[in-house]
Length: 196
Image (tube, rainbow, N blue to C red; front, side, top):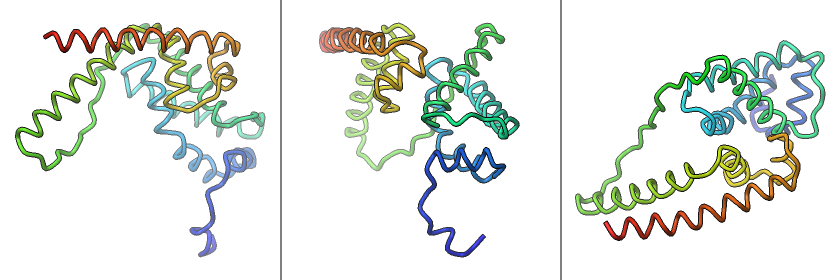
């Protein structure tokens, strides 16, 4: 490795994919680092079992490496990874027949706040979290998945259609129904919290 390699710009997904196809383990490592967190987060839309999600990701990337010589070149590496992860995860969840582990909570460092500020912050955060959780949980699984892909992963309608194996109009319908339902529930839950 040359000394100036550390200063080179990051490789495109397509360049990394070509690197994997030609047997470059560092390309696989870089692609995995690039998408690992997003793919884990996407997996939490289907299960809270982080270990299963990570196992599926390990299997996915190991499979890419094993099949590197015969890998097709997808139109979008990112969408290919999301769709493949979704399929691996669904297969694993079907095999485990609903086995769910408790979700893991991330450690969040405490801020330097007064007791009153901390209480106000906690109440506001809790109320917002409660509203968002209840609003999202009222959506169907397909609506939640479409919302996640659109607003958390910033995929286009066509890209979401590809990942979810549905047509573009179905994506538009799912998102429209989800947003309509979320608006109504957000207002209702906010009103109920005020009345408490």
